[in-house]
Amino acid sequence: MEILQQLFPLPPIPTIQQAVFIPMALFTAVCALTVVLAPNLFHNALALVGTLFGVAGIYALLEAEFLAVSQVLVYVGAISTLITFAIMLTRGMMYGTTSQTNKQAGTAAIVMGLFFLVLAGLVAGAPWPNVGVELGDGEQIIATLGRMFVTNYLVPFELLALLLLVSLAGAILLARDRR
Amino acid sequence: MVPLSWYLILAAFLFSCGLYGALARRNAIAVLMGIELMLNAVNINLVAFWRYGANAAVQFDGLIFALFVIAVAAAEAAVGLALLISIYRNRKTVNLDQLDLLRG
Image (cartoon, rainbow over all chains, first blue to last red; front, side, top):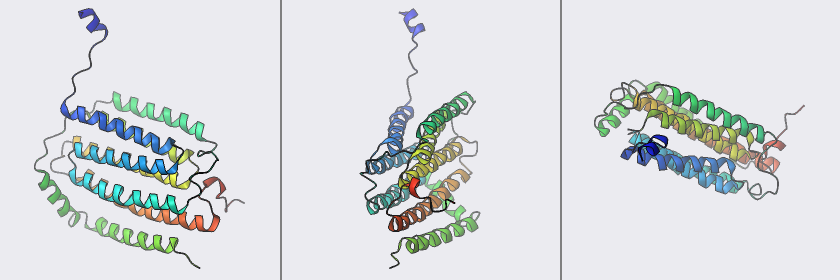
């Protein structure tokens, strides 16, 4: 029995956070694969919603609650709706008989697979800290974030507001029917 | 807690998927979805590095940067999809192989 355990050591028992992380990460990864591999555009969009929800869960696990809520509001609420509308407005591409990928798909798949392996190897080999510092009150963090947006980061914040205004007005102008 | 490297590996996987989608798909909307995946991967990295940094309880620069990325991604998606709708109206396709107006 002991020899068996030495040959096949049992994986360490995961903590609760790890037990939450693993299925969440698997779900996110499978959805991300579906986003780029599924032939039907509508399935891609649905899988994208799943991925974005998974990423929001990852933020929550990292104790960035405000970011998780923003992710659900902005990405799942707004961007995926925009993408769905764009898919429906450019209909006809959805059910095409031609391939969904271009000529460089095979090369891209090989290069990206190797890229991921290199990145994962580098990341796994580096000595990262395994435990973060203790965060205090979550509400306090959100209050500090809000204060920083109107003090230290005032100029970028206002620029961002201007960027959003200009881009939304520009989007309406671009998508408008000119006839 | 979960080791930092797990988050980084997940983010690397999402980034690779997104870059493959951006490089290999023919439909412009699918390319935009790949770009969204890449932005999300970068955001995971930013937040994870913030959480495991030594000053996580007092400095929130990583969080603020991630919020900026989300807002810019929203602007990018709006303009990109409006461009696609405009292109579709004029050319009846959003297939990137056929959009070669600038070819000499």
